[in-house]
Length: 221
Image 1 (cartoon, one colour):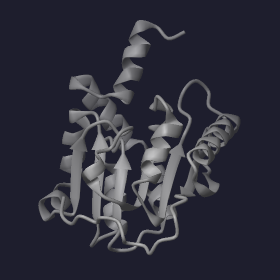
Image 2 (cartoon, rainbow, N blue to C red):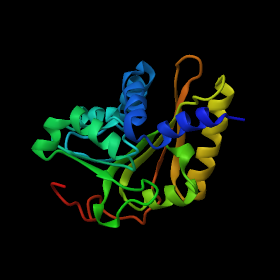
Image 3 (spheres, helix red, strand yellow):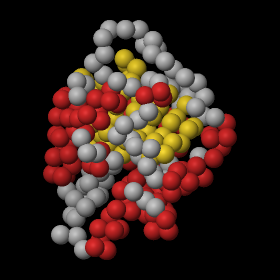
């Protein structure tokens, strides 16, 4: 059972806000495991230089930065419910925002705006555990992917004394939810970290057979 203070600090990592939220953001942005985890997740996506990418729960902007590096002539959009994190991520990716290669939105990552169009890749790192109905959210995300697109959900257990078993349990659950949402080609990949590994579960949408690129692909924002 968490104390009131422990719960308040935990909530800052879930929804950073105010001065304590900035402290949580700095911790997230400086953790070597977070930096490595974000870049590794993006590497697994094997992005084209012109890819359209969506990150859910971008936090201080580590994943946005990694995706921009991997898709230098593409467009990266992020959704996060924290204005505090939006400010930190904007500072980290200021050049890309000025050049129109990145868009940082404030909103509910569980229900992205339908007018965002379709994406070559959608990813998130350590936000899946906060979703109220993951299978429904995953189904929504699958409908926002190009037919050859990829959804990647990365999880790194953080609470208590995390172990490889904790990572495996999360991986199995994410796989089940992806299958429930109708994704195919579902597979997991591990990143060895201490004290517990991270896992990235990927899947592709089971869209009808259509030519890639037939959905709306807005440019700019």
